[in-house]
Image (cartoon, rainbow, N blue to C red; front, side, top):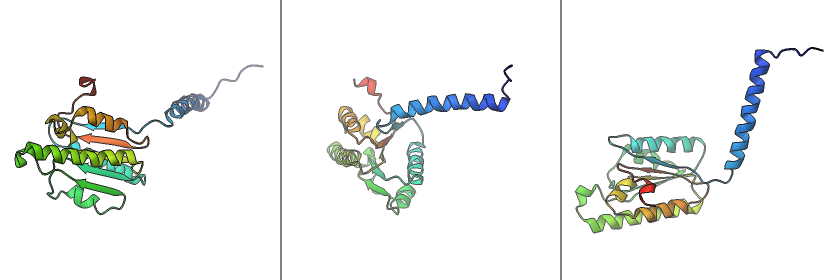
Length: 177
């Protein structure tokens, strides 16, 4: 008996079956891992907007989302006006405005600590699939928050909770450890 050569379609099907088996094995190992930590940083605009795109994707999957805004004051934004209408989103704007507006370091520290306390509670609760800490990198940059405390809060989050941190000048975890 001679072996009949495989058709292109059969070769492709075998190749894809091997890839799927390998991918399934990788995904099985990830079961039980914590949600992602995503950092949006850099100059210019778009960091918060990108984070809110992640929020939209989470909502599309019927996930529960929490947003804590650092620094930004009580002024209205289109994102806040939109997302506050949705039951699946818990929104807290806890900053008192940009640092050049307040010019009161102690007040800025107190506001940042209160905001991080709320975010830490949300991350650890198991009630949220995604928590966005908008402009937290600024609070860390100006040393309103200790990066070690932020890392501890991230490490203590519920395993299902993904987190997005936004703001310019994010510090690298390696610079702390």
